[in-house]
Image (tube, rainbow, N blue to C red; front, side, top):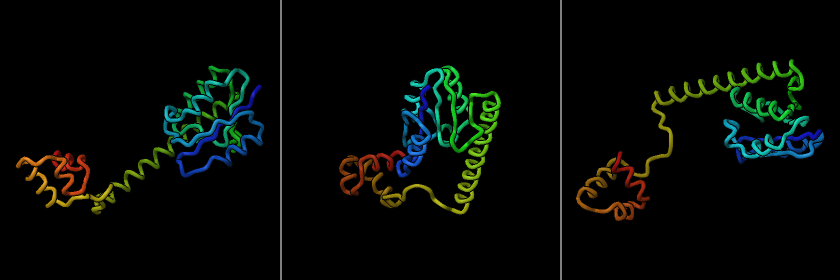
Length: 184
């Protein structure tokens, strides 16, 4: 009965080597690892490969629940996939996570709901902070390459027959920037 590992980090700047080492030390025969956001399964090809390889009696081992799923919907989909294949799941840092038992399945569902609640609370606080910053006049995004006077002159010159290519060369910006000026 093979033991398969899955390791994930959210961004390219992070390193999953520590997770892989722990999974291999635990006894995983193979570890699928990737650098991808946990928001959806679609963006995690290694997880998809891993889930397709699991068979009845196999165990999927992760270091923590949040390395596998970030939403209850995603988690329940993964658990359903594991049930269909006949595999179980175990987390090294979350000792309660063992879907080989009814109690483990119940606790997993509850913990998944709590994880999703926490994520929604973080999102809500972030949105609130953004609203407060905007109310104070904070401008998000890249600074404008062209000022209002330049934009006005570009519109006038274009209206008088100059091409976007010529304007982009004169103002040393991409044609797309000229297009945005003319269409906003």
